[in-house]
Image 1 (tube, helix red, strand yellow):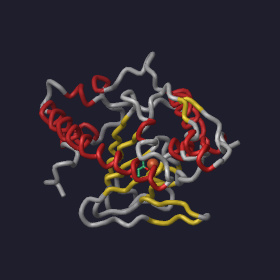
Image 2: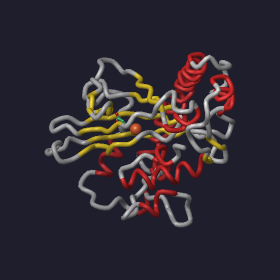
Image 3: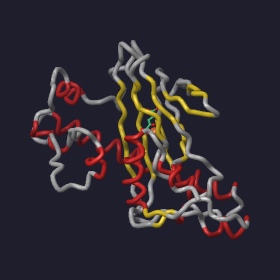
Amino acid sequence: MADEPWRLPNIVQELAAGVQEPPSRYLQDLAGGDQLAGAEIPEPIPTIDLGRLSGSDGADEAAKLRDILHEYTLKIKTVKNDILLALAKLLELDEDCLLNQFSDRAITTARFNYYSPCPRPDLVLGLKPHSDLCALTVLLTDKEVGGLQVLRDGTWYSVPAVRDYSLLINIGVTLEIMTNGTFRAPLHRVVTNAERERMSVAMFYAVDGEKEIEPVAELLGLKQQSARYRGIKGKDLLIGHYEHFSRGGRVVDSLKI
Ligand SMILES: O=C(O)CCC(=O)C(=O)O
Ligand SMILES: [Fe+2]
């Protein structure tokens, strides 16, 4: 596994090994920042800024990571676009109706998830139940270790690990609202594994924070449906998401009419 190019560079693992508190020189200054979740989290969570590895041996690794991530982002964007086109077609809407909801200020976020082995998977979750906030998530799953589970009709179903890297597409809350509930954002969680570490890379495709997220007018007109969700700005949905997440709920339920 160690020769896989997308694994975390050793420098980061060394930084983390045996450290109770990350050294302050690697931490992002959150004061005055727009970390919306901050108020809802009992203790601030340190955010490590990989850019601050510059000047150390990690500079090369940080540059490599940036280049790989850039290339990956360009490729995955075409997957995201194709899926949005296909979903619009399924809804019998103009093909670019969903794609057009993303302006050039739309926000794409990459999240690298690392789940270390846990001696008590019966007590500890890797990620607690949530629905993704964005419109679409493209998840590069670990090819050997499963852990992702999806809730359906009260039962958690495990998503098996698939040999070779595979992409898993998840509908997010934003798309649930835009499609007036035709596509639902599933609740999912990650369970831990006693022996094996696990990694995943999630690309979250969200809209511009200033955009009003609401059921698309074309859909309401065509199907003569009434809106099942209140409209909400992207940035307010983000605040609501973390408020509900910390209490174990789903923001989308609070928007249902
Ligand atoms: O690691 C996974 O399989 C899922 C990650 C996830 O749900 C998330 O990052 O929102
Ligand atoms: Fe998720």
